[in-house]
Image (cartoon, rainbow, N blue to C red):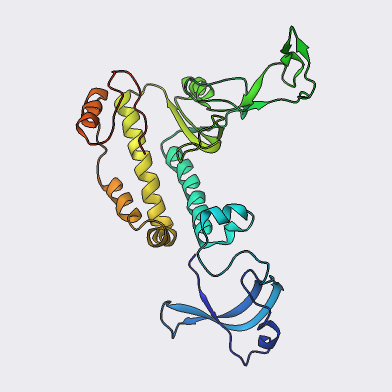
Length: 292
C-alpha cells in the first residue's frame, strides 16, 4: 500500500497534545475521512477527526531519520529496517512471490513436499554442510581418536540440508510431479553476491519429463513469477524502479515478452569465446564459471 498524507487541523482538540510528541518512529491511531487531496503529489488524503499517540520515539536516539539510509547502516539496526520503505517493499514482494510459487505448481497438479531440514544426506555439488550436533564440543566422546557420533542425538553425523533433491526424487516416482520450497543452508565461506549461507530454494521433480519439458517448465515458472510481481506488487516494483534501478521494470517486461534462447553447451562456449568477456574454460563438459 502506498503512503497516504494525513491532514491535522490546528483546531482539532487533540492537536496540542500530539504536536510535539509525533516524531519519526512514533505509533499513532488516526480516525478520519478519506477525501480528494487539494495538494499536489497525491490523489487522496485523510482529514483527521481523531488522533492518539500510542508510542513515542526519542528524536535524539531513534536511529531512523527522514532520509535515505545505506544498506550497510540498516544492517546494523536489523530490528528496525523493516520500517523503511525499501525493506517494506522487499518483504511485500517476497511474500507475494512465495504465494505465487505455490499457486504456479498447484495449478499444474504438483504436490508440495516438505523435506527434512536436519538430515544425513548430502547432494552432489551442493557445497559444504553445516553440522548439527548435541554433543559437548568441548569434550566430545571419542573412539580411536575420532568423534563418536553414535552417541549423538541421531546416532550418526547429521547436518542442515543443502537440498531436498533426494527426497524429491523418491516422491516423484510415486506422485509423478512434486516440488519442494523451503530453507536451505550452505557452509562454503564464499563472500560474493551469489552465495548465501541460508536461503529458500524451489526444487521441482517430475517423472517422465525430458530436457525440453524441463526447460519449458523453468521458463514458464520464471515468467509467471515476474508477471505476478508486476501485476500484484505494482507500487513496490515502481518504487524499486525509481529508487534502486531505473531499468528494473523494462528488464523484467523484456524477459516476460521474449522466449528464452536455448542452445547447446558447445554453442554457448563458442558464443563466450567470441565475446569480449574473459573465458578460460574451453574444455567440453566443464561447468561455466560466473563472471562479475
